[in-house]
Image (cartoon, rainbow, N blue to C red):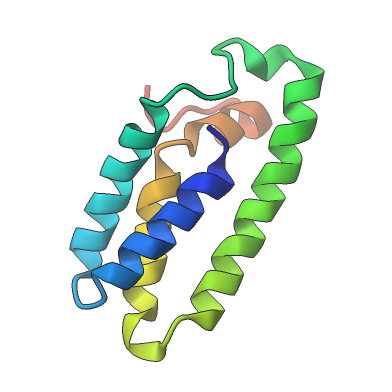
Length: 108
């Protein structure tokens, strides 16, 4: 699953748990694994596929924009939890761009 879906789910989780940033982060991580358990487009060897990389680059940029927009539109009192939920939803896939661009995997 691409990162924008995880960002949106994390934003909704953060909004629902507007007083618990650590809970929102943890729930974002759990939602990531739950969403990845569903059938979706992707291949473990897709990092070598140019078509997948084109889509992943666009999705990564959309995910960053979605994070900025969701944080900006969130009410001030729940902004921290919305950001925490989005980070929790996206952090699990941080290894892919770090491995691709820098050759480093933070989750060996």
